[in-house]
Amino acid sequence: MSIHKDVKKVTTHTLQWMKQHGEKISMLTAYDFSMARIFDDAGIDVLLVGDSASNVMAGHETTLPITLDQMIYHAQSVVRAIDRCLVIVDLPFGSYQGNSKEALNSAIRIMKEAGAHGIKLEGGIEVVDEGYEHVDKLKG
Image 1: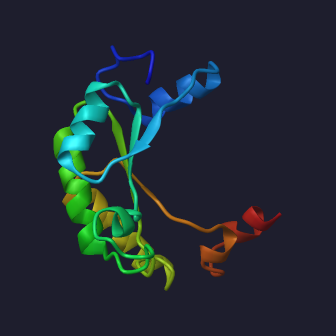
Image 2 (image 1 turned 90 degrees about the vertical axis):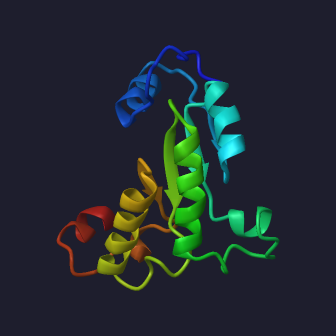
């Protein structure tokens, strides 16, 4: 739980300040309105709407079956519940691996339709298109 409960809205600038000052940042996973409200009221800094909703909420054995539409649904529920937390949403498998345009379109949908504050994707250099100039800088 954050010592900064007086912060009206956690932003990336808030997190950057906390990191620079050696303060702990709290982050939990939420998939629905009720839990997000509890976590927000408790002063949690960041909520992740994880693709693990596939396992936890839908009972699947893996995260692979969850769709972008389902992630948006869960994210909408979480965003409606919060007043203070920063909300990050997982891009589900298959919504960004094809190419950078697909990744951008998926991220835009989550940000626009759910009101999320940021997105998370898994992978490193292998998910970056080779056509970008900055790829060499990332590899070096």
